[in-house]
Image 1 (cartoon, rainbow, N blue to C red):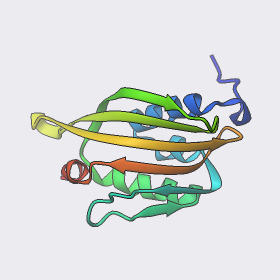
Image 2 (image 1 turned 90 degrees about the horizontal axis):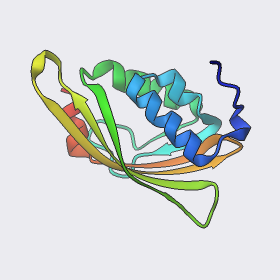
Image 3 (image 1 turned 90 degrees about the vertical axis):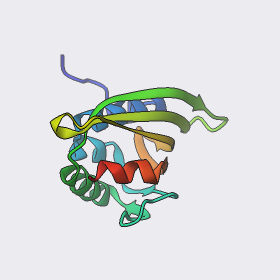
Image 4 (image 1 turned 135 degrees about the vertical axis):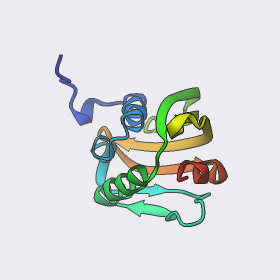
Length: 141
């Protein structure tokens, strides 16, 4: 069944669900398409060698395409610990653990994180992505 929901109809919770699906699919295009053209994605705890932010939709697309393309890890599951709606209806805060599988049966990797998504008109305007940098470094092999 085709998705008839337009971006403007998406709530922050809808956007979060789509964000998680893009991660599961390792689809930089699906992820970037959730962002406004001039969005900002910040990594306050960026791991060494990782940029502190992506400025704009196309930077998100290129950055995630490069990161996911270089990583041998496949995202197996995203465990949403909690999602908090705030006094600002455009903001949702999500605690999650990303579980990935390593190739050749080398085991699994868990990366805890916290996302703060600012959504307006059904598109992400700003993300603060508090990812465990040391765990994420393991994802890059």
